[in-house]
Length: 440
Image 1 (cartoon, rainbow, N blue to C red):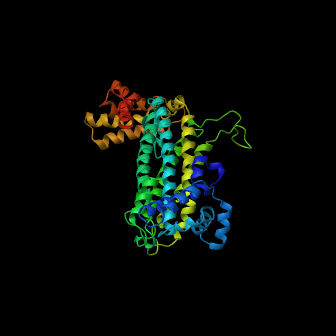
Image 2 (image 1 turned 45 degrees about the horizontal axis):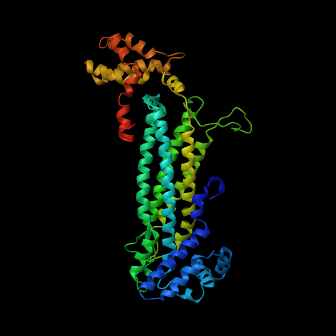
Image 3 (image 1 turned 120 degrees about the vertical axis):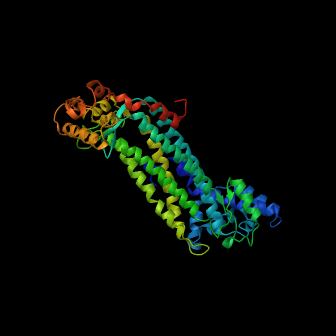
């Protein structure tokens, strides 16, 4: 997590100040409920909230204590006792460290999820606007990176919109699954603390009680959360890679915005590189790289060990901060993307109408030829177009008309009718309605 790829709101969730404040709230809420149950004095709970609630925890002091205790939560509680006084002895009654650490992580990941959901909403808004703008901007679709049949740039964006809509639903589900609280004590049996305390703390922090914990919240929840972030990162990279390909000099159907004064190369002043898309590809790799450690964290020894702890201290902040930055960069990239419909049309025409080969194939079969003979007739003419040099405008249609086997089945006007590119776009409205609803 470095400033270059960080945004302040997400970084703040993972700051020591935020973490210690959440720790205090967990401990103080638990003490309040214990006071209601008559386990600790009510006045003690009130003093803890009064003195601790107003305190600014001294991070350097906590670090100093931890150098002796070698235990971060004990160091924190020792520091709180310095602030609160004798009543601090009623903190952490019947609790274990994981009750605080795991519940705090749940709060942090829930808050991070809310930011990421808002990020995805901005991505969706940007995609929807540009998709409407280019609903009928005809372009060549490619399979295996080779010209296939026409589509529109709006349809490409509609595909991205549908994908990020699915990602939003996935993240909502992952947020719900991760937002769990455990205040169940050592080994998770509630031997020294009433389950009502867990329910109370969960309600206060906007969480749900973990149905059954060991000494930790089960890590399959966390694995699913980080796996979801990995899927979202892959969707970001898919869009970024599409833009990178479409910006290649030989294609140049879209281009990242190049601002005044921007430089593309230290050596070549002419360069305009897809640096944002390339950056997004790299950031996506980082987020995905944190998924496997999260999956491996599911396996702990017996009721708990701390092999997961060091992993989560790193991937919690790094994955959410990086994805937050990437989603916002993607929004700006889409909003400012330069789109060149004239280049799309130029590229569409490069192969002299070959993208209509399937229409001719189907017409020949409907006229009575076998599929095998129809395919052979269309392919032999198509291969001549592939091998031709220079301007190939209208060449495929010309060759088909001159082919005796084809012309015996289809008239010249029949063949010409098959070279209307907008034939391929007759269901664009239906596709848009599926993705965006009837208003688009």
